[in-house]
Length: 293
Length: 259
Image 1 (cartoon, rainbow over the protein chains, first blue to last red):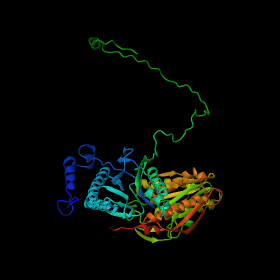
Image 2 (cartoon, chains in turn brown, purple):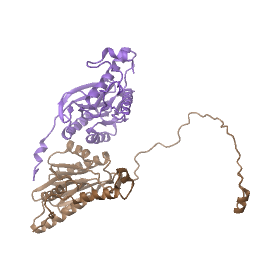
Image 3 (cartoon, rainbow over the protein chains, first blue to last red):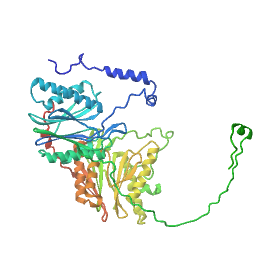
Image 4 (cartoon, rainbow over the protein chains, first blue to last red):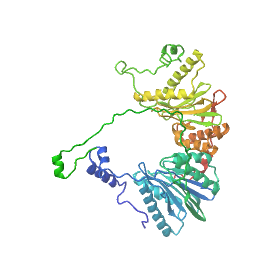
């Protein structure tokens, strides 16, 4: 029984790449600048998540964390988007990269995992979700821009993986992805120890996401956290509102500046008087009265 | 600039005496002369942070030749005088050229015996003009400099890069350090409520933690480094090479890699 989707022809399918090239050539033509100038001819800019996403294993499960800023170029498209996606009851997936790709691919794999669970009668495993995601992304050779951090608990214990857009996977007790991943990874590399408890892991995840929020321009707004244990999931959204609007960041000293010196000088100016005289024939024919200043 | 004549008495070996001026002949008279297109032998990040009684700066001692770790003991920290130190990342040939010029200027000033020495702010200002001037002639010195020291009794920390972008801050990092370590340094400053609340020990350990993160995550970093400490009330000291301890025990937890 084919539970998982199969490509219609063997090997890689690049139909959409050809379609995109054809569209660009047909509508755009000419230089990049022309294409950018005309709104119909340039391909729309993908909404990207910018992003800092992290995952951390602790002695009872996995903690996932994410910021909440979605960007479109240099504009913040969504101040409070949700980047921690549901895969199954004990498996969640953070997504960085193109927002549509992360949303759709996690939703698709979530459906496949659900069908697989019903078909096998067993609780889903994190490694299955990872396998499905990476096979799918590899087949599209990086054109699906989804960088994912999958974490969850199954019968074998807690697991944490990262999947890159080209389909490579990494397994580690702490993982970061997205534009803020370097700032977040620095926090993990300096403070991670094996065998953390839940409180320590959540604090570490919170600090890593805050490092991304405050030191990376692609990440911002709030911290979302998802704690996955064998006995349940805590989906804390928002975990921390780090950027409240309207909060006074500093107090600037008010009052008038001190006057050090006064220097009065008269300004000599010529007063010019102006008198506007209209052509009385045309003006009176039009009904206007002549103006004078 | 001081006169080119006095500079030629004490130039370093393998220097043709033009230490005082960044000379470039025109294309017509010297067709062999080229513009810098890419850095060749490079130094990695430089990190620096102010503390309550001075500034500390660290730089590792690696000279990379692309992805080859070719020179493992290159000093990148320059002690200019008792109140000023400078370190550079980027092309090491350009760094060594500029350092020679700076050193000759410092010797000039000692010889004149007028009691006026480079201050970190004046060095920072001079470096900015030189770097911006070279950039404007499309022949940059491919470096990012950090100048640290004591200026008017206060700690000073300034940054200049190959484009001539210059600014002063309480914590600075170049290259990969700006992505990996600036967050950690800013966090250390925030936790102490500003550099006035940061002790020398805390600042040193914060910088060491940052160097360790760089050694783990920057392919061109190294575990041997120099440290420069410029206290406000005492002369500058450059110490090194120090060796960085690193902990790789996390590797045991990396399982199920290739399933």
